[in-house]
Image (cartoon, rainbow, N blue to C red; front, side):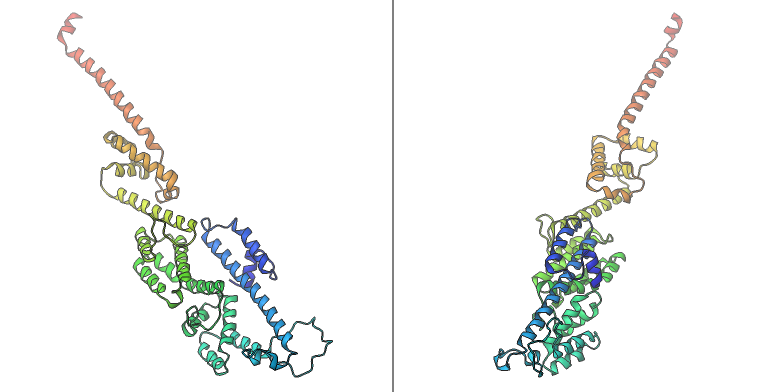
Length: 397
């Protein structure tokens, strides 16, 4: 997501401060919920984090500029011993009291050079660029500028973030760059999203074993070892499954086992709404799979007959035949299936284009009416036949 995109998503100007960003984000959360639209919620979250980065970096730049100019007139002996001399080197020209401070102070020359060095860094030349910084004792400063560049536009710098994680050990205990919690979260999200397309492709191609193996390998990456990032991976996986319909309940069980999710005891990571939507999606898939299996099997169980009557209704004479051979268990199975389709899984009806959830209710009455009508005609026919064949009755007339 570009800088312009984040401001447009939040409907804010690019000069908004941190407080304004947080207030606007809180307002937008009221209308953008993860259970309604996970993709829109994630886009809003990304825009919020990127806007915060912009605002905080802008504030840091202002503070750094103030520090440099406030120390420029001090003797070098008065500075702390651990302060880098290159950063605080004053200009050799005399600073006149009448200097116009209305002009914004420029970055110190050495800092500007490492900013440019980071701007020119690519995944291919990262090793050599870092070597230059190490040779001059500015490795940490170079990495700080490189991290800032990646944080401003993670989507466009995914390959560079990958290279930095591999070569500079970002997001591990061995990193030199200093990252706040929200910055580490943003870089982690970019790394996870870089593999999103391949995970979706595996699900669409029904490669569930490959999907699970890839997820296991991803979980073992060094940059995902901390508790917070493991939880971020779990939420990312939930969103991935919610945004894709091409997976089975069996895969969900294996993923739940991998992350120790437990439906019975509500053990999971992430927001409750995200978890509940995922569980409901899994239950719906299991429900549809069971009904399809009942339709394909040649069984006369109440559940199988109910599935045929509601989801794949046969011709009227066949329906009446099923109803005549049915009993109270059949009607109870029909009632339960109709209730599930109406209340629990209303979207499942789309999987059965010929379904008719209501017409089965007329069958008991039709069967009873037909039986009474047949009994009446049979009785009349019996009386007529008996009267015709009774000799005594004929002689009496």
